[in-house]
Length: 188
Image 1 (cartoon, rainbow, N blue to C red):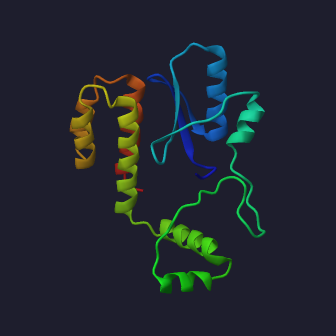
Image 2: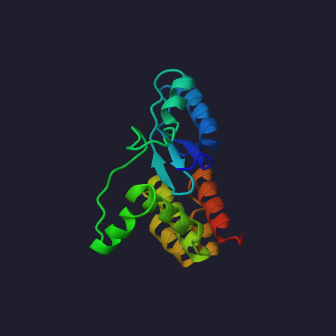
């Protein structure tokens, strides 16, 4: 996740903050301290629609420090935080090519992924944005009336039908979904 990405926090169905991570975490921590028995607090990574968990114990500075991405290292080896090890299956010729690249296999793969992200087509960006909106909708509105039909309207890009279906949803949830969808469908 990029340090310039935006996040949105909800207390139940009410939006309490939106913006860059430090601002959202500060508002969320303040909300939790002022309302210890409030509805569950959910924070979403706006570009992906994924719910993200944070540890709110301690001071705001401690919360922000734990949430900050690990500093990048220029030396060999894997940084202590921020790296997820996963298995990748490639053909021997792919491994040979990757191993011959400057910085090794991991650095070459990171460069390839970043380059591919920069060259993403408008259709790919739109699909990703619609999936993010649907991921959010599933979490926040999956049990609300009309969710399945709204999801179908979302992928059909039927904005009129989507707006009609979400009318009965909580105002902040409805507004978040429609804002994300309008942003995804608007030309850049």
